[in-house]
Length: 199
Image (cartoon, rainbow, N blue to C red; front, side, top):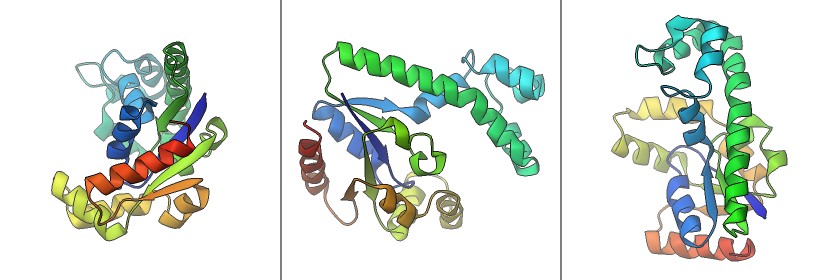
């Protein structure tokens, strides 16, 4: 089974590309969604988060208090690392469970949607190929501002906190340039990439 790591900056169009790859027959695994589920009410990370950080980091409904955790991470640079040490193994186990499920269903290609693939370092060894969805920073700002309540300067701050465009491109085995093109053209580019993945 071929393992593809799909990544790109915020607003690059990763979700659209993932949906197109799934439509072409790939299995899709969303690492972010798995991560969020571990910290949701009743999630598999909640007990360990409570033991590590204290009950005040859990909301009344039993989920991770993200705002409180963000504040701590600003004050204590080790907080994010400690949280990742709880969540990452859980995400890894659930990802592998989904891979086994895809294999049993006869899938020959699995695509991991990993926004922070380049930043994490650990994912590169787990995938066979890296597919980067790329676009200009201005396009990222325009798209994210249009779909969310974020101001352009807030979007730029998120972009600045992610891996640089050049670092992502350097890690790529294949690139889809999703800027100034129609959905039809994007679909054709995705289909071309998919052929190289055996889809």
